[in-house]
Image 1 (tube, rainbow, N blue to C red):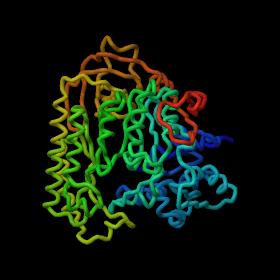
Image 2: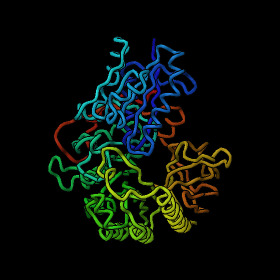
Image 3: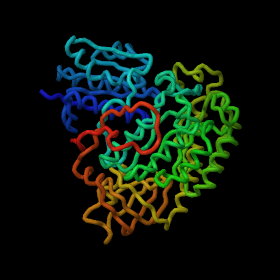
Image 4: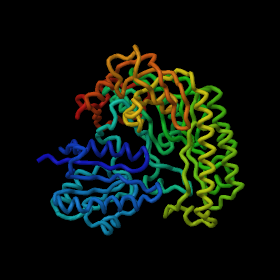
Length: 493
């Protein structure tokens, strides 16, 4: 009998993409995605160890699932990802109804571990210390018909004192350019219009095989892939961000003028304590260079409030940089201890109430800046890739939502003579911005244009791309020959 699966993903884009790989493997092993209201035969938790209360969230979810498993003895529960890599066998000790635990280095083992646990009627725990198989050699069932993740590297060589990722994901391992481009081509062949290149530090890409400008070359090569309309990437590191990447962004038409540049703190003293090997002047200098050649660029960031030892003076330095940087949006976090990181043992842990008060001031400032910047876009024409599920109020407002080329979220009215039958996720529309809010734009008015796409056809039909693993060997730049793109025989359910 065919067994069904459900994957619950926590954390960053890396985890989301890993879940696509897990889904691809399970489907290759004969599983099918569970219907939304059905009880799945296998539930997989792909966990995060970076976010606050990650442990509590996992064990809370496992506890809620225990009665369901008791009522369905054949059900299996698997736990993978960063928290599994960190907690290892402790997961089975705390939740003995878990059947499989696997780490970040062996996501390819899941189907085998499930079968072994079922055969032996006991929990299987397999945590490797280094990468067994590069994740991108594994099949993937993609979440979106129009936008895809493409990993260019895994792991991280930095030693930021607040971050546990290097100990869980390992040292940086780079994929060969030809493999990356083949995967991009495979997605485009399936109708995908947009790809996001993923890495813990994308602009250090190429260090492993000795190509200093490998990342800028990769961006330029993506520009020669016919049918690829948008290229994004995340995340770069300010210390390694070079002018050749800025030039590639500006000169490659399908590379979007969007940059996520993590600041973390505006205080040079705190940056030193964080082991962030740049200072505020360097950071702001990068933004100046980007805007000099791409005045329309939308720049976003990450900021941590309340790092150990942070004083009011340090915090004011962060506010000063935020005022100068004019971010279009910011992911702001209150510092919380991560066991196993140097920062967790530092003196000067900032009281929770102080962190909260500073956090509130930062959010208020950033929201005000984002609102000012978004108001400047009123009256502008924006090209939107129509998205699915990004507008929580779309049903009641009778709008749809999409992403502009600079990454901004735009809620629009899908009406007017330009509309060809109906607007679907994956289609391309043009609209005029009528209102700017701190976190989104609104375009209420007739659409200027509407282009139906193959991605829209697939989204309307409920089809999602399935790509096989790609491995090609030696480095090469340029568009890969058609036969190098490893794809399945079309989209599948």
